[in-house]
Length: 172
Image (cartoon, rainbow, N blue to C red; front, side, top):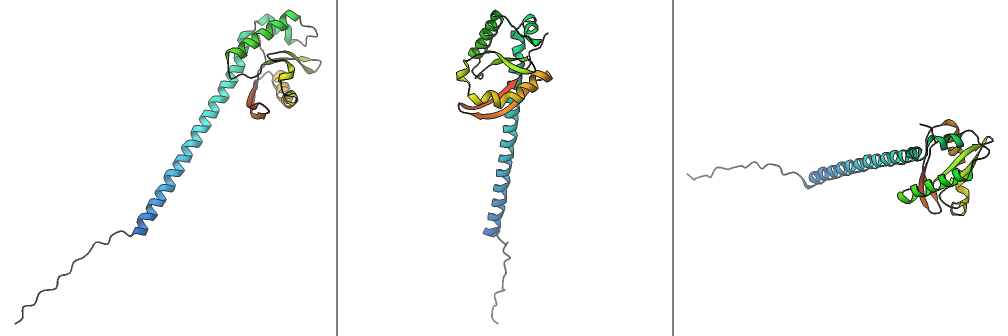
């Protein structure tokens, strides 16, 4: 008799194929990247909304700088406003601009004969890009005649990208 050695079989566990591991890794990479982009999108929008609110609040705070009597003088389509009132407003706007680096220009326009008239500003007119007043006129009209604050969004100018808010002066 021959001693026969029984045949043994071993069941090997199928190792995951390299392709399958790469496929799962690729899917995970795409998923994590998509989550990263989603996070950036949400964070950017939150920051944008924060900056919009900051600009609007800053514009509306200007109301606190001018007494009701001054607002009365300029709000009734006045044809003549004293030079002292204009200079006082100009000094106030200049102080505002000097204390807040996020303000490039500040000015006050008043209704005058169905149109708008520039009353006071922080810079000489030569410092303001020539097309800026014309470009902003529809928004200025909207704020002046509707009595609501208007935000323009970011706009490119010769001296950089700026956003503007136009806020009507109101009596308390």
